[in-house]
Image 1 (tube, one colour):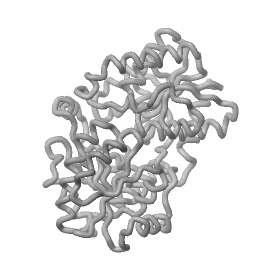
Image 2 (cartoon, one colour):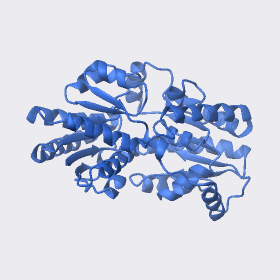
Image 3 (cartoon, rainbow, N blue to C red):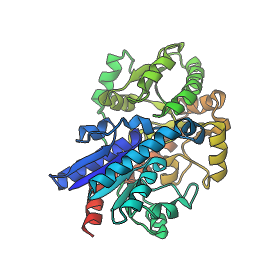
Length: 382
């Protein structure tokens, strides 16, 4: 079995790696080609070019790189056409992936195509599912309420669970060891600062996160801040935090990041999958996000929901506070962070919502990567 996989950002790399591991356990002679990050490379993929080239979000951010991205789309599509794999599996990053799938479908109409991560048509731009159905046969959905939307548009779809429920987590002993290594006392509050995995996000959000955490630190002088980061933006994060009044602790290694999540008391995070990672570790959080003014205006006017945080959506609560767009300001964010330290009721409400979220996403069941692999094999056998 030969499969061509395409992932364009860190969250997609995690999904792809879990899927690859599941497929290898079911089909030992499977081989992979395509584009991915370090986790997919560890599972046996040699990426045709660095995945980080595709980690661009927002109209204003994409425009300067449009020609380069268009060239990469053409190169990737041609590689699929030349390979004629058993399936093209695109993972999230729809602006890139679905353009690749369209070129492939036009050249090879019989090519089986699978997309991992359903478009959030329940949130905005519902017409995306119909357009996607022209080039995608089957969808692997992360959220339990998504299959009906995909099936209504003409694609088959399986809810396979979210990989976050099966990701390894640090033990209490590992968290305590990290605190000891970093010389953090057992009663010192630890805040995670998570400004995103894309360069544009980090550039925009990290100064605001710094300002909010600085206000919090004035109330809690013993506060320690840990910034988990990923390969593509690690150097930028180090440069941008070099001048902070109180130096944060930057962690990049997977084991250190897991221990940091286990050791944390609260988090300030960009909107995205990271909210589920925090939920899996039962870390109360505040979500804050902003985009380029043009991108934000367009997105906000298309939104069909009143929250963007997955914990709120899956648990059907609004336990996690959000500060989006014009509200993404330090003086608004800091009081919400303070509540997570000083208000037991606020912490308890979030933890209850996290428990329900994880239950609905499949915690305790078969690993989502394996469920996704079974879904892929079902499509190939049809």
